[in-house]
Picture 1 (spheres, rainbow, N blue to C red):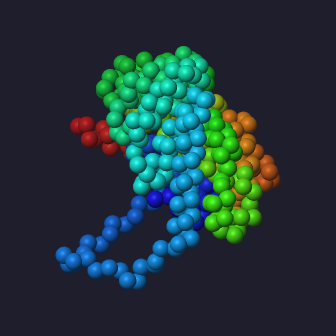
Picture 2 (tube, rainbow, N blue to C red):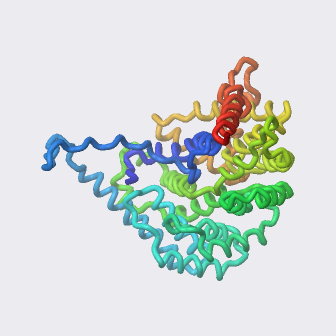
Picture 3 (tube, rainbow, N blue to C red):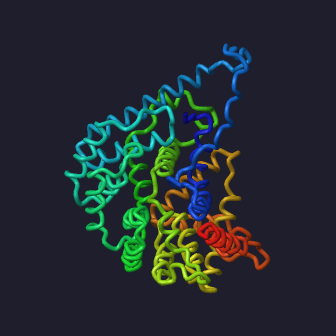
Length: 404
């Protein structure tokens, strides 16, 4: 269950920790369900040696203040959800469902989606057919592990009408073609994607809309009275940003795995050579137009896997790696005020520009970080590092051996 003993630190960790892990998981074929961060897996509990469980009398007793704080937090979340549901604005109805779904991701004790959420989202889609955010929320809506519903499919089709130049909106079609094991259909979707010049999966839009929600619904005194003394020194506005960050981090991104797999070109075996040009075009759009750092990293990945990169691509990726590395080193979780300021500045830049990479660049400029890395800086885990190129070759070799 999500706790709030380190509320500010939680926000910045949710903001920053996902990108590298998401790219790594997608490249290696591991599951990467969302752009959010997940807590480290707990070690399995030891099995009892007796049929009678002996209470642990040394266990720490529940902290009444922490329990009261958590109760106040849950009351607050319910009040925000109820207020959005009662609103006359269809976008609020969709945001109510989205924040409710994000709660399932952040809190394993939260109840699953309800029929009321589906009904509310159906109302929103009908009432706001031209609101791209409403349609996007509906297109991403899932109940458990069920396949996309008619609601989600219809919203996705409407979204393509509203944003025909957005290549990210075709990722679900690509995933469906890959699941059918239909290479001709995969080629067709890649061709459609390569003709698009935009790539946006709505992360900055979600962030801005969710921030507006929490600005309209500030933390109540009942919760504020129970926060740590250090956090009370911070402006309440900071908590609106942290709430928005946590929701944006929990909202599922599209499935990139099918795109990465489709673009693995093996010149030696002749696998997928016809896809190189399309994958290169998609990769460059993701690098230049993608709204998240994940887009940027995966764009370079497509260029590498399709063997379509140039020296200019390698140099650009090295600059981006440098800025991200310096940005991560600048984060100070031991200083609540500095961390809060970082959240506000970073998110403001991201919302203003629509680009997480540009937010990283601006953060670097504020910190006095040089745009270009020193000549002797080792980008050992970069997008075009020798390590990644070796890993690519090994994966292709392993798969070829497995198919014999």
